[in-house]
Image (cartoon, rainbow, N blue to C red; front, side):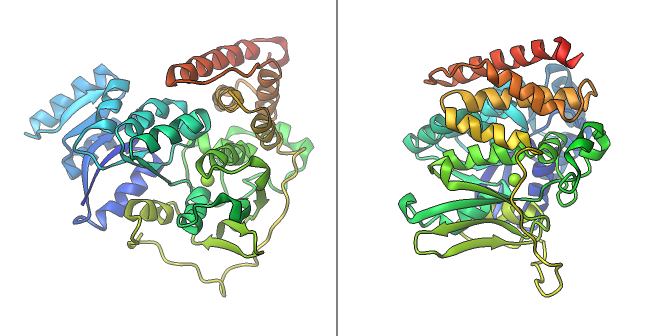
Amino acid sequence: MKIISILGSTGSIGCNTLDVIRLHPSRFKIFALSGHTNLDLLLNQAIEFQPAYIVTKDEKSQVELSALLKNKNQKTEVLFGSEGHKYIAGHENVSTVLAAISGSAGLISTMEAAKKGKEILLANKESMVMAGDLLSKTCEINNGFIIPVDSEHNAIFQVIHDENNPDKINKLILTASGGPFRNSKIEDLVNVKVEDALNHPNWKMGKKVTIDSATMMNKGLEVIEAAFLFKIDYKKIEVLIHPQSIIHSLVEFIDGSSLAQLGTPNMKVPISYALSYPERISSGIAGISLALSEDLQFEVPNLQKFRCLKLAYNCLEQGGSFPIEINAANEVAVDAFLSKKIKFTQISDLIELALSGAISTNINSIDDILAIDNEAKIKAKLLLKGTKFA
Ligand code: MG
């Protein structure tokens, strides 16, 4: 039986994971859950799954939930904040950690799980983008193991997990839906509203990743994630727009064979593979019917239109701390767009400006990463106050 801590149980990935776990009560035991702002949902999850711990975002919500659980005579202990997350990620009773906190906030707890040699189901791509080599090495040294949950990386993992020789791979092809603006003209993107950008055609996801999908920064971050995760030269990673989201990624081998993973675009499919690996279990989602599906289409992304994707490749070329810089600038830019401080097209403007003055520095520790992240965010926020974004 896998004993699981879910970091981010009230988000989209967390809820989908609990849906799969509900189907298999004898296989999985929830040890701990954590949530950010949705306290009602976290409380309901705690009552249903009876974890040893839950973690809230701050002391106020900790006190509130503790009282509510005590009233119900429930023994679940309530922790809060970063220390609480570290505790449930590294606890000796835990075999498996689902890292599903959105953004850079997930890094410290993911690293803690790596240090303690846990099986990490990685849904927080920003951890891999920011900490890349360090996270992989920490896992290896401590006999930990990363199973990607992101649908594209999960597809590639399903194809190559027995393939430990990257020299046999010609290229990885990450598919992308193209998001809601695939058919929009470049000149129309300046008028995109927050509501339009949040309306993804194929996937139901959290706000940050949905905006990232609309700008295709999500795919840019995924290229960086794939380069680190599969230890492959970024020049061998391509992006292909596939609007139907049936093929979730492909691997082309040196003999000319390409292997792909196909499935209904529902996160429960990759989540159930990550949960059950190396076995397979029911995800509750039906398979695809190719005879009934619309024609599968493919196209090369327009890098003039999706400048964020181009900027992500530039960062891989620069290497060093550039992936941390782009991730930080993107978080600030997406926040600013969601709070209607900048236009949609200014997301890439801000990131480009932030990167233009960046200097790559060495990374030796998690503290180095957090310091670069923090400085890059301060810089991006200062740029936001400049005349270009007023
Ligand atoms: Mg993805």
